[in-house]
Image (tube, rainbow, N blue to C red; front, side):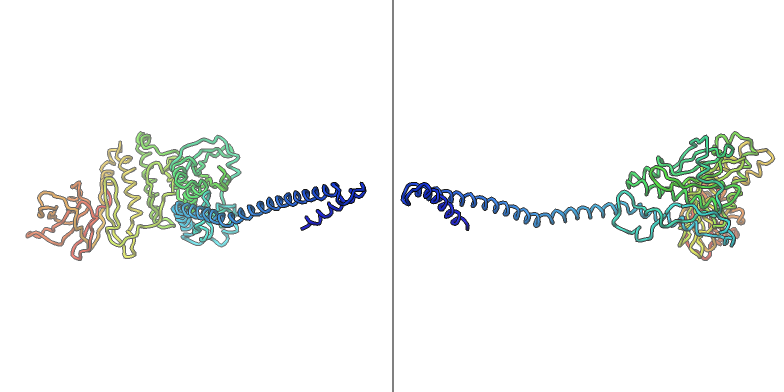
Amino acid sequence: MNYMAEAQQCEELWEIQCELRAQPQSSPCHLDARSSCSRAGVGLIIMRRRKIAVAAAFCLSFFIGTLLNLLCAPVGFHHHQEQRRLQDETDAASLRPLLQQLRERYEEVLRYRDHRATPPPTSARLLRPLERRLMDLAQPQPKWESNKVKRGSVSPALGNNKIDVSLRSPRLGCQDIRNGSDVRYLGSGYTKAVYKSLLNGSVSVALKSVDFGGHDIQNCVRHYGTLEDCYRLASFKILKEMILLQRLQHPNILQLYGYCYQDSNDISDTLTTITELGSPLEMIQLLQTPWEDRFRICLSLVRLLHYLAHSPLGSITLLDFRPRQFVVVDGELKVTDLDDASMDETPCISHTDCFLEFPARNFTLQCSAEGKCQNMNEKRNLYNAYRFFFTYLLPHSAPSSLRPLLDVIVNATEYKEVPHAVVAEEDYRCWPSYHHTGCLLSVFDLNEAKDVCRSHSQCQAFVWTNQTTWTGRPLVFFKTGSRTLVSALDKTTYLKLTG
């Protein structure tokens, strides 16, 4: 737009120069000036047009790039977001079983903590010291149910909900552990590792903590990939055992001296319990001890079973009832592992739901009107004590004067009477039988029926039929088990409870 003005200005300058040289208007000087200014103007125009074209191309490319970003970038962004959402949902689904296990064990700890046989004294709270910071076990329910789960950790953050499990002032704590000496590894199981430590130079104690190299932790991390949450899951077992050791006070239950929460393996508030130290129960070594010592072990076990059947929490059963769960302290048998104990009686609808199965014996108990298998916890403990302890420790090298009595104790068969019930199946053949496919015999009375059942290795129950032979002798059906127990108004079943 200023090209013509610039060309005119150029000509005027050239004309001034020509006039200064005294050249006429038609002289070559003026002609060359016009020609030069014309060429310069054309070159200037071309140069400026090129600049405009370059600028326009740059603007166009920038506009096209911006347009492409606006059109294409959202697609990639949404695709990435969708991938992240799907990954979060996949992680949440894969971790859901772990969340369920954490919730169940947390609720179990609460049930054992909140179960009180008698209210505490009004002054009990005043006697307790300032409470230590305990493990945070759970967040409010929405945190558990969130689908947006971080892969590295699914358990709630620390510091919000704390559960007070201390029933009394602990005698020992973290400072005692730090001042301990001569720490030695004793052994480990699926969940816990046990160490021996000498405290204050005089008291030997056992330290129990979660074994990070144990089966529970390793198997959990392999499946879910989160060490912290797998630790929390395993630590619930120690916490439950700690509560039971506080609530179940008995000479044949290991004493809890104290506990400590401290950071370990980059996990805050790991729990260590401090308990009485005992010697592992080795059955082979025990069989080599004098009979009086073995009798003392069995007597300790009987006292323990009676207490567990009538504990302040109700009837307690040891689901993992094996010699390795016990220790010997000053000649007395003591149970040391209570993380697999249960105070829940088995629910049932019929007698068939109350079935106890062991390698050599099977039993069926009675289903109560309240929908619970009657005395199942007690019977399970009793039979396990019989098959793991009494049969080995009592008869071997017993005094001759006591052997008849011990034979009666070890071989005695107790029966549970179940009125208005009959075992529909589970027959076996015997001779002479009044039934061609079962064992139907005549007896003089109930005691003879028990003797017959005791003499048959297959017999686990018998049915009193209220039918008689022509001579008036009662007819009794002998059975191999009682899983098919059904109602029958005119019959009574007797179940063998111990072997």
